[in-house]
Image (tube, rainbow, N blue to C red; front, side):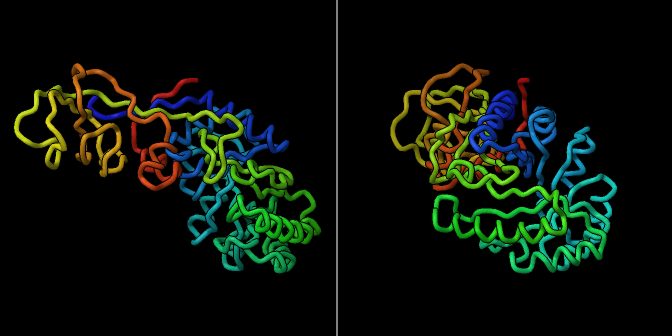
Amino acid sequence: MQRPYAAVSLSAIRSNLRALARAANAPAIAVLKDDAYGHGAEHVAHALGREALLFAVSCVAEGVRLRAAGADKDILVLTPLLDEGDALRAQYYDLIVTAASPASLARAAGCRAHLALNTGMNRYGVPPQEAEGACRRAVALGVRIEGVYSHLYDAADGSAVQFQTRAFREGCLAVCRFFPRALRHLCATGGILAGGAAFDAVRPGLGLYGYAPPPFENTLSLAPAMKVYACVSQETVPYGGGAGYGAAPKRFRSLHTLCAGYGDGFFRAGGLGAVGNLCMDACVREGRLPVGTQVCVLADAAAYAAEHGTTAYEVLCALRTLEKRYDK
């Protein structure tokens, strides 16, 4: 293999979903946005077809890809509609859109929708006090409001969670006067771990793939679902003073090269056991390993992220272009 590949455990993802739903005592909406956080949305969707209440994706195009792959479960698009073309595609492929403002509500005419409430994150959504007016407008436009949701901006801040939960509950009361069967969902992975109010469903994303968002600890024994492997492409007796790009930090007796670099989504500034910066498609490491040896270069995205001052979210999404190999 001249390129690294990701081994993805679908059984781990199923197990993680069950653990999260059990902890919340509520069914789970499986978040598959950004290619299921780099794990391959089509494969994950089929693996969770009997487990998830519905799927959530970032945009209409992602929902269309799931439909084309044979996913027949309800799919919620989290980004509000921006143009008529996406509205038409959403209707044709029977996607549930997000209504988050007067403009996006108007574009959702004739669609199935969930109403987003802005309870303090200030990303998307109408203020809770405007929920009644939004529902009246939805009725007039023929928008079928099938759910209502919001998002916690800091699930580790108890007072913020209380404020947002109270605001969300008040907005839900207004929505349910018009749409009594609207599905209410607030908590993502952080909210579940914080013991937040589950309402009718929870919406785990990162937790499905085996990680707890900072600053939470993995108290549910969620299992990382992806490991990345790369092959040794050369074994070298060092000559001269370099080790990859830059001077060697010491005198090495032997070096080997792996087929993995920043072109594959890794960080250029070291990691993977490299002795210096990564090259685009290779990294140089200390020691002897036979050519063709497969090496696990990443088993814990959170630990790798901590080395580079970021989060598992960024690491997993950056690796989504890797070839995937799946278990059952």
